[in-house]
Length: 147
Ligand SMILES: [Zn+2]
Ligand SMILES: [Zn+2]
Image 1 (cartoon, rainbow, N blue to C red):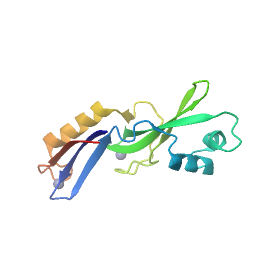
Image 2: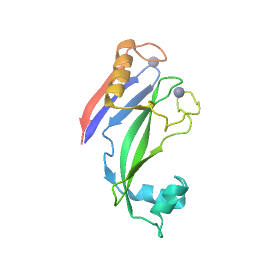
Image 3: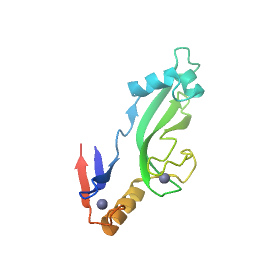
Image 4: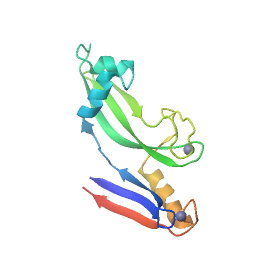
């Protein structure tokens, strides 16, 4: 369940759609576990998710959005919350190493970069009002609920 929010410019054929609530709380998603065991997400997760793990952990995966501190545009990623049986949690961010809009290297773990639904609403609202970031023309508004 969630909401799709975005915009599209028919003239430039560009646009963005953000899925709010996407993959909320997926528990131990097999694709992520596979990547983690392979070592794609660093040594700590490789050890924790591996066969001889010292502790049993669960992973809850959520969709997340990040705002590039350089160009102020938003891109999508995911956040994995890793929890052991004592309840301790740490967060592992999965997002592009470079902003897909301006190609600058971004530190996704840095605080303040993550944007919540309200931030996305404001971002999309601004483009709805100001028009297409490339040509300034009127954009098609995308705002729908999905399940
Ligand atoms: Zn950027
Ligand atoms: Zn345009």
